[in-house]
Image 1 (cartoon, rainbow, N blue to C red):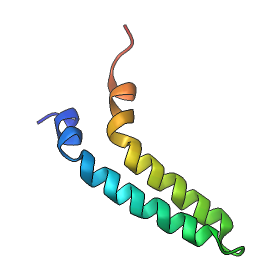
Image 2: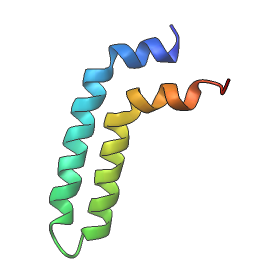
Image 3: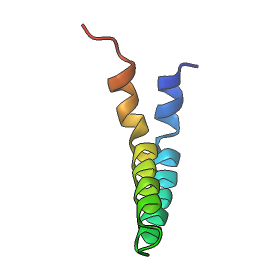
Length: 63
């Protein structure tokens, strides 16, 4: 099974996990002491949620 097929099947899971991680990071960033780690965690959550969409853009060779 190619990575593209796996990502297509797991899109919902990636979106759900990425959303939870992003919300957790933004909740953590709400406190002033943990602002930077919270924003980094929120960015990581966004990348997790967007990975099924971003993978074909990165993995496909240029024409």
